[in-house]
Length: 259
Ligand code: PGA
Image (cartoon, rainbow, N blue to C red):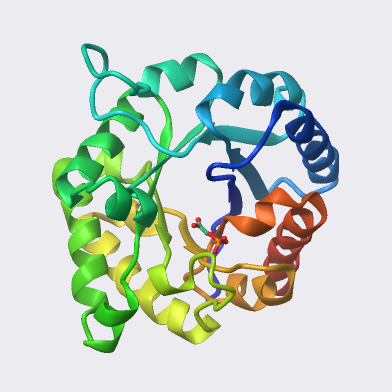
């Protein structure tokens, strides 16, 4: 039977945005999202300085907002860090943790990502835990070993109750920003593997939202989102264009209607 989980589409703006451009984009996304059915949820993860702007422009609508990383610490002498509770004070719902760009450029280990996921949950945020393999790892047949290890580090740290509150995003590193998405079948295969891993932690954990990320576009979104274990997407480049992002949200609606 097709799954009944609500679809979730989250934008990851990365290091993009300026106040004036954000206003136009957020207003367009917010008003476009008003027409979406309730079982498709939408969020945008903005750079931290724009949290207040996102809160002001989005709080009367149905688009949630969040951050792209959070500190493993709650407070203290950690220059440059932003705590989960700080983001929560601005109404954030989501914190991406363990994005491959953080793992690669900021040397974030699987254990650090697990701590960040725990900090997010403590502050009432939903951590979007990213996992994904490089092209070399895929070609060496190590995809399951890599993504399984990344997920296990997080699951090992959390209680069943907490683990049931996370979101997981499978983002193959070779598909991010390259225009070369995984095929729907490649993505589904990894999602089914991750779903089984989640289910092994506990019955409630089996139903966490599993997003796909990596060159999702209006043209490929519906096929991806129609897969039985793909519950939506984490959208980079296409989340910076209101029409593309809303078209991807529309694909989530179509995938839901078709099941
Ligand atoms: P992309 O990025 O959609 O630009 O490939 C996805 C991500 O990194 O979250």
